[in-house]
Length: 335
Image (cartoon, rainbow, N blue to C red):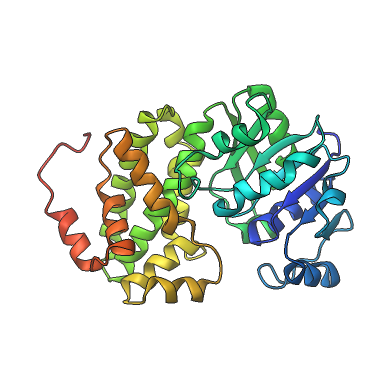
């Protein structure tokens, strides 16, 4: 059994709130921090996140606030759960006040917008290469974690003992946390699966059916694995929770905002209208550019990802994108 820890969760969206609830139920003292008083005050006053997770009251061990120095004073761990576009800014604000012995982990999924860098690389730049860090990924919808439904995730760190320490924070009666030392593969899987969820959503929005969805998931996994191996990930990672597990979840269930975004695009809505209707960050819409940047740097072919980019950013008609994929030259499946 783990000892109780003092943990600050940074990010008051659905995922940050769900993780804060999980950690508090696991017996930890949890401080949930957000930068916007207009978002934070209702959570503090109502003792629940009625916008994203209504009907789930906060345990007594969970407090909420906007005062970052107070939120991180004397903590054992900081857990970042912001969107990828806010990740660097959050770490830069956190760095001067993070206790020297505090652990750092993140449940953010994506690549850094504008640079395509892995999040552990951003952390090393800001905190120093010697600061131990861990990435949390896997098939885990926030709503189901918050409601205490059985879930399994992967916690990755370069040091296996550190990964285990971070995993023990999450591990409980309704959460099984596995460990990995493949932080590159775990982060890559968590980023690319969002792009592929948009692709399957588009196909379903066009009415192409279950056969098409299965093909996109399978060939999408091949794309993810090719890129993952090229950047130093391990094949086993993409066959696990952070790879195929998260991919299947995100591509097949409408709790996925990336899938819902694709569905809207397939039905003829604009990207702007789809994002507005969802009301939360759609990570895959930004990640697609960075995934392609990474693929081109390493000479990796990613045709599905390429067509998602064409639809989202180049004005390609979704039906034409599918036609282009089907018209590709005959080749062995294992290539």
